[in-house]
Length: 243
Image 1 (cartoon, rainbow, N blue to C red):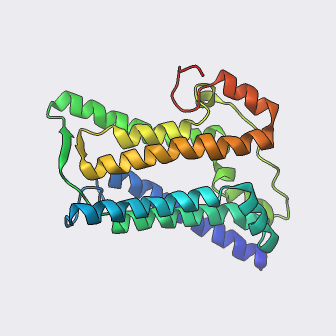
Image 2: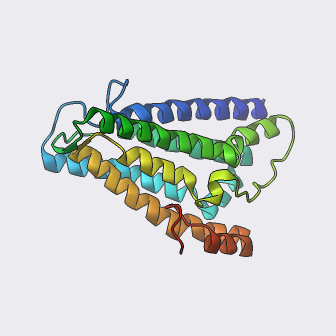
């Protein structure tokens, strides 16, 4: 019964992640969804900046703290190891949903591309960024990354093996193609408002700081010399840039 509950919990966490991920495309791109980055009542500038910065900080803190090995060790000392990744995905998704719900638009224009062809090109690049994110998860292990492998193995009385260090496809160009995809999606827009710019600047700073000073530090400890050699050979996020 316990394993079945963990399995249902993991499936529910993955479904909530899918909703948050798909909603993010509409939210950032001002497409399809009822609440986007530029929709809703416009508050005072100071209130919008403070609220949005707090929302993004909540996501950044949750995302960073729960990804650290010390937190994982603490969590698995209390709860099932099979639940750890699903819990991380669930809380990350809920933090994102909170951002969508409480985001305060700042609709002052920074730029607006009026040329139809150029606008269409930027829209294509926007979707390409999200496609890179999705493809990159399958180039390592999508099902382990989002906790599904762990809950399936737990249900079948198996122990999930440690993830293998892989450098497939996009990972031969940059060490963090998922982050590259996000950056492309956040910045490629024919209409950039102050609110969208705030979102893009804060998330970009977070990505570079978190990857360089937190994630890569952990990876060097876990993988060792292999990862250090990989760092010397492959750029972190921007392709074709040597260290």
